[in-house]
Length: 111
Image (cartoon, rainbow, N blue to C red):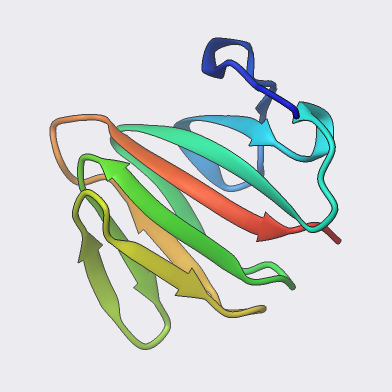
């Protein structure tokens, strides 16, 4: 078993992420994993990710607050407990347009 206490989860700094605090909670430097890694991002009001993509799929679950996710073909607003899957190489931008922080769970495969 690998337990990661949230306050001790390693912080990481992905490119194109602004006014966000990203912490890995499982996998990579947060502990062993055979297939995925998990992170939680705290997105301040006005926080955002610029339009970009990665070569692996992403799964988001919004735990608290609201975020808007925009792809090249659509824009959606997520509310708490909504989820979203982005395909490999699918560009996305993400914004917290509210006045409250948002909490977003991210799951991605290990490369």
